[in-house]
Length: 345
Image (cartoon, rainbow, N blue to C red; front, top):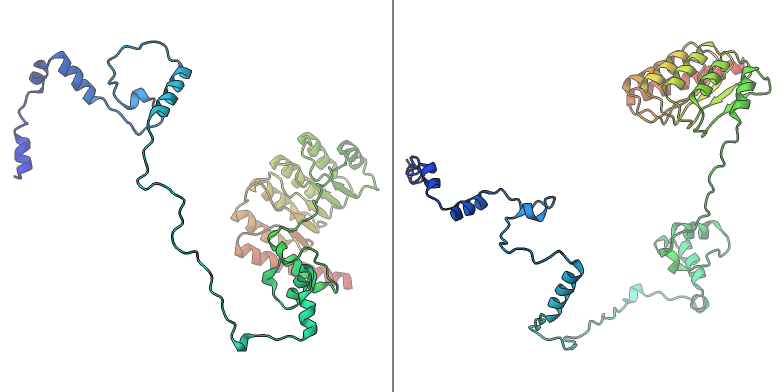
């Protein structure tokens, strides 16, 4: 048995209750304070719960914040500042650094003709910048200055070499105007099978009611003149994807379908892909940039659809897996070759 264990053995038979009965009220209060669990590092607790209350004085009055701040400022002003160990006199010690002059060796010295020396001495910053670009000293200028000087036969730089630290100024590109399409008018034309309506473009219209989009897809089932149907960024979800799938099973005139940048999940995309197999007129399909990645199973289904549908020659989707990407690329090459051979006939 070690010495530490022997030291603990003498406390084994101590009667704690007997010790507590012999303590005075002051000693019990002190013991209670010692046994309180405090966490001084926890900043989420109030100050009264982070440390023991050691104040025995009664409060002198209510808290006056302004008077307290004034008292603290007065106390801070009355405290004498500590003197510096070494007083500051402003004296400069040591010698200032002077960069030594480097003598150019004779083999590195370049002597120009007097005419060139005079021309360079009188050249402006813009002319020097163009000369540096011609001599391939592109580190002295920005890319825009370099290519402007190389591609132009005249001095086009008006800022000089010192402008390399300045950002290039570009003309602001205005936002695209809102889509002016009247949805109710388009719906009536599709329902009446208007022969002058060949394209339905509802891109970027985000407040289209779901029932109206469902009616539009229902009307597209029997329409024979619309060739292009685009629902980009219309906040469409799986209900619209299922309506589009039902439309593809019956429509025999649509050639281009674009449902990119929507909220269609893998279930909705799978329904559209299964409907594409039953459609023989669709030549372009774009389903990229949905809110969530559809998954490996959907990408494999895309590759299978492209292999089984030779009519599709344009497909818009960025594959994340190498296997479906290679199969889709091979299928698209074969479909375009078949289309080229059909045109020759």
